Length: 149
Ligand code: ZN
Image (cartoon, rainbow, N blue to C red):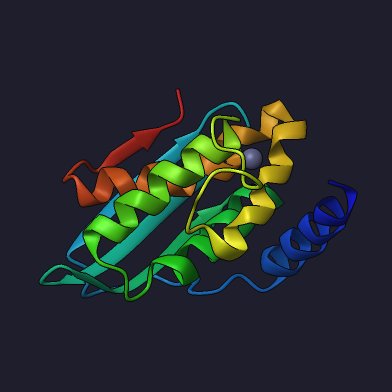
């Protein structure tokens, strides 16, 4: 697990410093606000869905390094995915950070997102890592607010 932890630290710091897709999206057709009161993370996510495909996804907001890095990597992972693929990723990510999916033994399509298995060792950070995912999930289901509470 320690190699994964080093990678985890490195990737989080890098994405926090240079978050990807960090901007508003005027032509978004789905958006939602996400809030993690426990840590103070606040994010807005924007999606442009064409037919069944997530053509573009972005975010803005402020929060800790983990919430920001997770949102940044989420936008990369979701671009070009169908709604169904996004739903699978949401489900797998959620199960991974809550310890219900073992990335070593359970089949999954998480790819690079696997580094967030590292938050399992920091229970207070689980909500930081999953905030952006909850927010996108809410947006795609027509809800405009998501809270980790
Ligand atoms: Zn946080």
